[in-house]
Amino acid sequence: MFTLRDAWREGRAALAQSGVETPQLDSEIIIRYLTCKGREEFYRDLGEPFPAELLARFYQLLRQRGRGVPVAYLVGEKEFFGFSFKVTPAVLIPRPETEILVETALELWQQGDLPVSPRILDIGTGSGAIAISLALKIQNAEVVATDVKAEALAVARQNALRLGAKKTFFRHGDLWQALETAESDSGPRSFDLVVSNPPYIPKGELMRLTPELQQEPREALDGGEDGLDFYRRISAGLGQVLQHGGWVLLEVGQGQAPAVRELLAQAGLTVFPPVCDLSGVERVVKARQQEL
Image (cartoon, rainbow, N blue to C red; front, side, top):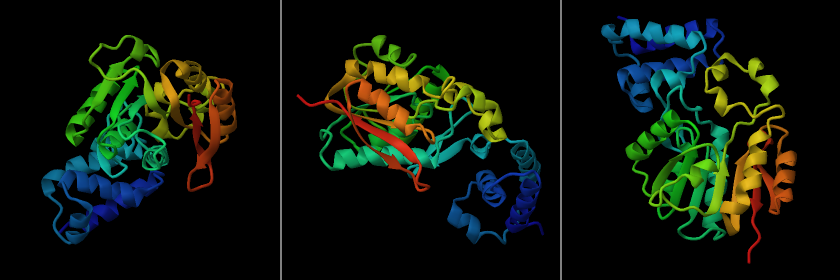
């Protein structure tokens, strides 16, 4: 009898041979996806037979994963901040380090540095992970999510509907253009908090990314020659949309925090010490518009 445990072991061995960094976890995720099992069910049922009708699909997914297709694209979802988000090749896969951005925003709200019912803008929303997580955690918030890619906004809208995020508005356009062309009933136009995880990989480094990252949308990764193009554009437009006393939180790549902090300071904002991830990398830059 070929059990779930046998399939797990076989998948793990095949993925390890292909050079996948997390073969055990990825094999588990693929099996759970095929069998519609939660993690507890998976471990409880390891001795059960693996459905014969799923074997061909199992081996097909293993081959695709071995060729570098991200497991999140194979199963069509990714967990972020305790919520399951639909993902497709049209959007960047949400990552654990981006949860720090959401945590920092929640801390500002919990400490009273944001209004009880804040107006929040998420620039370049992708799957909607940041915007929707904030809308679900701050139930009185009005959240506007923008993206230049219509296919990405379609995924974000689906996630908002699936997860029950209220008062979320989606606007299509390139950065600030999305606000300029918005209809009158599509949410606020000035904000207490602006958040973004913009493209920040320098153009010259794109070809050196892992096979998995190279399959994610290039426009969600390419930050221009020095990786700072979008930070310049965001900083230049904040004065038009940020309320007095409003905050901006930007995720940055390793080593980019000093340059991004300088850009925000030049835009007239008060800059605060960055927030580090678990590896000690300065991951989120914080700044605030002066209060009246």
